Amino acid sequence: PPAACPPTVARVPGARPATGASAAGMDELGTGGGAGAAAAAGRGPEAASGGGGGVAMGDSGGGVDAAPADAAGATARRVIASFEHVEAADHLPEPFVEFLRANGLNAEVFAVAPAQLPRFVRACPRAATRVDAASLSADFGTPVTPVPWLPGFFALDGSVKIARSLAYSRGDVYGIDASSGAAVAALAPRAGERVLDLCCAPGTKLAMIADAMGCRGELVGVDVSRDRLAACCTVLKKYGIVRHRAEQPGWRCRVCVADGASFDGEPPEGSVLMDSAVENVRSGPAYKGAPPPKRARVVKGTRAPETGGGGGDGGAAGGDDAATAAPAAADFDRVLVDAECTHDGSIKHVAKFAAWGWETFEKRFLDPARIAGVVALQRRLLACGFRRLRPGGTLVYSTCSLTRAQNEEVVQWLLDAEPRAELVPIDGLVAPAGGGAGGAGRDSSKRPWDKAGLPHTIRFNPLTTGTSGLFIARLTKRASE
Image (cartoon, rainbow, N blue to C red; front, side, top):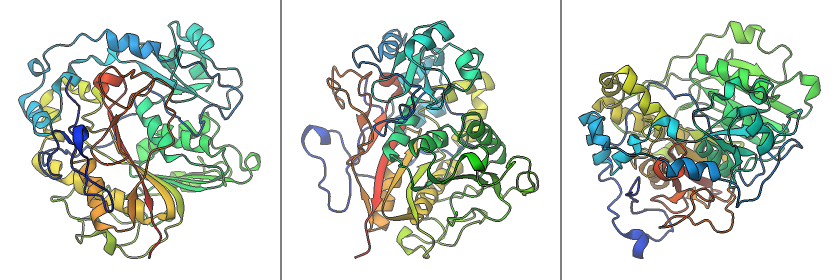
């Protein structure tokens, strides 16, 4: 099928534009994508998939069994081969079809039933019993195969209800999309670092980050939704990320309700829902008495983020240059910005509206003001995350949208506005021998990502990978000259 998102010419400081075959079909950045954003009312639940990567998340403990690459991915290949495509335009509303056309997206992506996609689980490295493909196959009652490019992750039939399994009930595994795991692998957090997750709910990526750190260092999770953060706290407790403080010396994990677009590096007073340094964190006054902040407003236009300090209400953006932001605490070694988006890359998310009614979808996601506003919000989130990043640190920006307007163009906006920002290669993912990074005939079960429209960026296409769609960019902050 056609590529999910045509690449764009990269105006990256110090980088040469793509040439030859990789530049075929490219057009100038900023064209063909103006309608490519829609404001999401809130991040949808994590798809049941898996993450991890070259940082050995998942095999850091003794409970995970690695598997040979030639056997891994069989479930994904089998399910993808069984796709029964229909004419997507026959069941999609015309406004959404126009949205896809305007952004160069393939409508066939949405002709796949969600149950036809594999689902993924990640093994908890603190599992009391050994977790491998054989034990999970017996528990789930269906063939389970390891994912070769994400250590500790397994693929299985998408119709399986993992919540009914023994492994899930005792906290040996949890569901998270494989593409989301790739974003954490690209971040590559390490023990002893300070790490910030600016849009952390519902918590599965936060748990992966903690595992990669070996629960040593400091981890701060921020989200604007109190309800979703409650689920996040449950995940962290169930999988042993937050236990009694005496059991975790050298480790602090905090989860707070705050506006990620104006977070100043420390949780606002009264905002912390969970703190591993505090006993009985979920029953204390910080959890019950803290008033929720005002939700960030989706604003018209695509101006740059506010330059003021944190704790704000996410109001109208000010200024036109992220580089003019006021100095603030920039002391995190790594920052993950998995920004709100239209969710058009998530087949499971879009499929819900077939039951709820497409009219609801059009009002919530295709309204022109909201389409413009979500890009402004994404810019503000990215700029805030970059301000919090120390020089030499690593920032990962990702969305589950397939559009350029919410991905390449948002990243390019930061590169143009901030001279210290630089795209760097994503080296946290395992690429087994025999897998290509795109092109005809590649084995997507071994290395499923495609090159995106900026240097060193990648994209997961649901139609060819079986995962949720995801764009990933990895940036660093150069020291001031």
